[in-house]
Length: 64
Image (cartoon, rainbow, N blue to C red; front, side, top):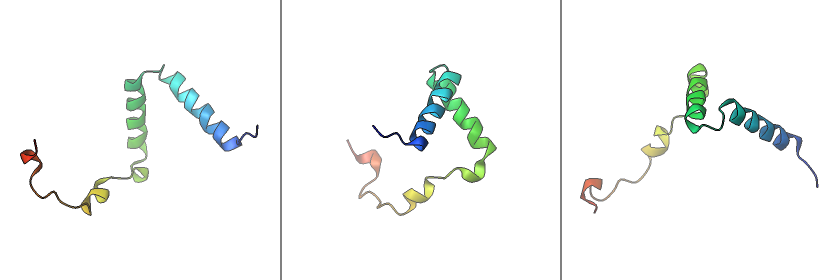
């Protein structure tokens, strides 16, 4: 079976991060947040994605 070296590298990085965080999602989230703070110009805001979304016919509070 052919192995893609880029995919293999990504898998190795993922395993290293999982080991660094000891499989703890809270630690993983904290690590991701720290990295986001170091590189704010690389973080994409999703607010622009919501600007062009259709508005609901009635306020969401009225849906049951």
